Image (cartoon, rainbow, N blue to C red; front, side, top):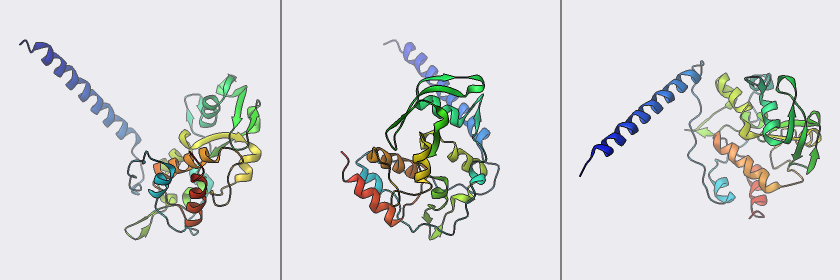
Length: 228
C-alpha cells in the first residue's frame, strides 16, 4: 500500500497544529493582565440540560453587601474596536436595517426591546443593558476555600472585558433599563420573555463563575418551572 498521501496529510496536520498553537501563544501574551492579582478560578463547562440543571450548577451564597463598587472601575466608557464602540457594535448586531453614519454611529434602523416588547427606530431611545448588572457582579463573588472572592478586585483588564462582553449586553428601551436598575430576578423581571431573560442571566453568571443568593435562586427557579 502506498503510504505517501497519508504522510503528506500528517505533515500538513502537524504544521496547522503548530501554527495554531503559536497563534494561541501570541494571543495569551497580548492579553495577559498587567495586575498581579489572580483572576477567579475558571468555571466548569455550562450544563447543556434544562434551566433547572444550569441553575443547580451555580453556587448559592448570600449577597456580598460589603463589596466595593464604583462604575468607573468597570466602565469609564465603552471600549473601542477599530472605529466602533461596544455600544455601536451591539446596536449593529441586534438591529435590522441599521444605517450607520460617520464614525460608526447607527442613525436609523429597527430594534426590538426584549424587556417590554417595544419596537424602536431611533437608537437614541435605546440603552445597552448589562443583563447581569455591574453592581450585581461585584456582589456575586463565589466562596472558594472558605473565602469570599470579590470581582471588584479582578484586574482592570478583566473588569473592562466583562463590561464590554457583547454576550452579556442587550439593546432595550431606556425606560425598561432604568426600571430594572441593578436588580436581580428576585426584585425585577421583564414584562416580556422571562424565560429568555433568565436563560441569558444564567449563562452570564456561569461564564464568569458568579454566585446567586437564595432569593435570586428561588425567583429564577420559579420562572424556569414555566419554561419549555
